[in-house]
Image (tube, rainbow, N blue to C red; front, side):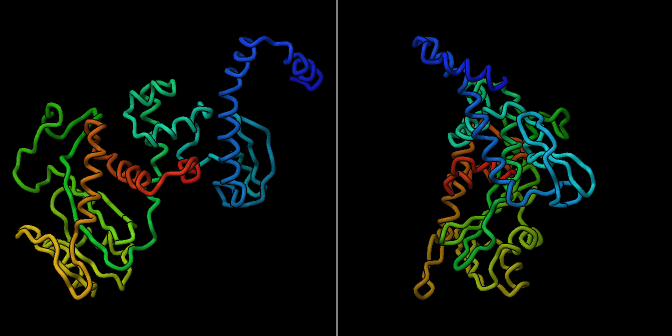
Amino acid sequence: MKAPRFKGWFAKLPSLNQPQRRQVLDALHPAAGLDQVVALITEVREPGRCCPRCDSKRCYRHGFANDLQRYRCCACGRTFNDLTGTPLARLRLKAKWLAYSQVLLDSLPVRKAADRIGVHRNTAFRWRHRFLHWVKLDRPAALNGIVEADETCLLESQKGSRTLDRPPRRRGGRAAKRGISSELDCILVARDREGRTIDAVTGRGALTAAQLERDLLPRLDPQALLVSDSHAAYRVFARKHSIAHETVNVHAGVRMRRLGNLAIHVQNVNAYQARFKAWLQRFHGVASRYLPNYLGWRWALGAGWPEGYFTRTVA
C-alpha cells in the first residue's frame, strides 16, 4: 500500500466500532508474530553475516522474498537470506514459529502441538526436528571436578520407517533377548556436580571403551575425577587415558561411599536418566534415529530454555 492511501486508511481507524477494531487486531496479530521472528533472525545474523557458499562478508541488499531480506555476495554472486544453510531454511508460516517455541517448552505431543498453533500434524513433526537439529549439539565445552557417568538403554525403535529389518512389534513390544543386546539403544550420560551435562547415543548393545573415547573424552577435563559403576569399559577407558577414576559397586547394593571428604556416587546422573525416561513417556515411543534430538530437547528444558532459544541456536 502506498503512503497516501495508507494515511487515509489510518485516519479512519478511530471511527471503527468495537467489533471492527477487534477484527483488525485479529488480522494484525499474525503479522506481529512474523515481525518478531524476522527481527530476532536479523539480530542473530547481523554481526557475522556472510555468504554460505564462500564465507565472504562483502554483500549488499538484493530485494525481499518470503518476508526476509535477500543479499547478493560481491565475491561469488550468490543470493541468500539469513536462513540459507540453516535447518529453518525454506520453512513457511514464520508468524507461528514463536508460538511453536512455547509448544516445545510445554513438551506437547505432535497432535496437540498441531491443534494449538493451527497447522497439520506433519508440519508440527517436521518443525520439531528442524528446530532440534542443532539444539542437540548445544552442550557444555567441558565437564569439570567430579564427573559422574553412566549408561542407560532403551528398546530400539524403527517407528515411522517404511522398511523394517525385523518383524514388527505391537505397541513397542519387548526385546526377544534377555539382558543388554543389540536390540537396545545405549545412551551415555555424563554429568558433573555443577549440573553440566553431555549425552550421546553410543550405538546398539553394551557400552565399549572406544565409544567412551569418541563421545566422552573430548568433553572431559583432564583433571576431572570420573565416577562410574563397575562397568569394565570405564576402567579400561580411564586407565588408557590416565584419568582419575573411582567406581561404585551398584550391583552389590552400594549407593555411596566416602573418599576423604568426597562423596562417591552416581545418583545425580541416575536421577537425570530417570527424569529423561519419565519425560519421554508422553510421546508414546520415539524412533531411534531421533533419540539425539530428544536428548538435546530435554537438556535444553532442564537448562532453562529462554524465548527465542531455538532461533538463536539454529540460525
